[in-house]
Amino acid sequence: MKLQKISLIVCLCLTSLSSWALSTDTDQPIYIDSDTQNFDMKSNRVTFTGDVTLKQGSINIWADKLIVIRPNGSEGREILEAYGKPARFSQLTDDGKTLKGHALKLRYEIEKDFLLMTREAQISQDDSTIQGDVITYHIGTQKLVANSSETKRVTTVLQPSQLNKKE
Image (cartoon, rainbow, N blue to C red):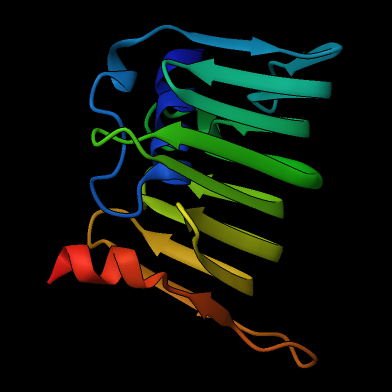
């Protein structure tokens, strides 16, 4: 199984809110550390558990559990699911800033170029943040949608210094 491709795609998904990813990250090797690894060849599923860390260049993912699924053994259709309390990620951008995010569950579908962050989801850069129960991000179209739960609304904080820089 090409963990490099799988991890690369999940990392891109987890950290690309436009073209914010550090452009050299995708050329770097991927390292996954965990307390245990369980590979089920029949179902094409690798499960990493216990203090899971994934690193590729400036990309970092921390989770209690990371599952890499390859439906029907088809390369390029992998699904990555990270679980934690919360599962977290960070990545440097080309302009030297750090993009960070977390949720109780992160799911990336490579074929669809789609990231789903669920339950207590948050993504931030500098002091600007978006929080919601569910955050979805379509990488190819660069469209992000944050949804609320019945008890909590979506919250966005944009810092004035960042807004002024974009004008």
